[in-house]
Amino acid sequence: MGRYESFWEITRKALIYAMKKFNVSIDVDKAMKTWLNLRPYEDVVEALPKINARKVTLTNGDEWMIRELLRNSNLLGYFDEIITAEKVKKYKPAKDVYKLVEGAIFISSNPWDIAGARNARLQAIYVNRYGYNLEEIDIEDKIKIIKSLKELVK
Image 1 (cartoon, rainbow, N blue to C red):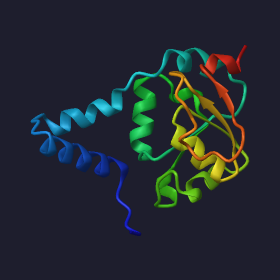
Image 2: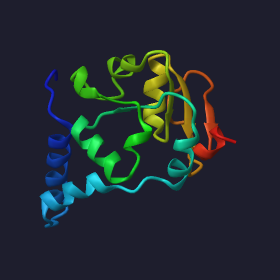
Image 3: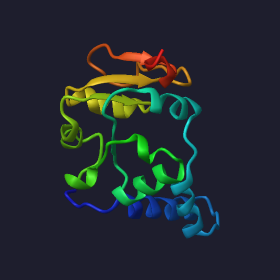
Image 4: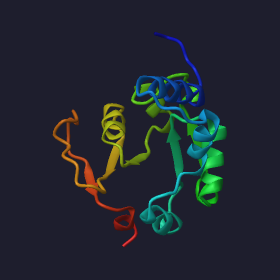
């Protein structure tokens, strides 16, 4: 396709599409603002301050969105950098996005994100909080699997 739109705008359009598809009427702007106030998982709140390494978030979200989200969840100060797909005008799982953090150990609770990271040859740790089966994801080699970020700081 080659066309890039901000994550905020894509998310907004997807919400409007879903509302029409399922005949739901809500305040779109209010719904979008809830995205900026998501609650982090408990293990993230506990473990993040204890992880003694440079911490970067690699996200499809727009930088302003992620900065606001992390600020609202009191996590912004734990990150050294916010790197977004905006820099390459592509979205994960495109390899170019993961190349922005080449050499990093990639940690995610999203199987598709782990698959994308491995495709870009990053070391990966999958946080499998809910015991999902990874056989459906095409991951060519073994990855470290944990149930909680707390396992990284034991």
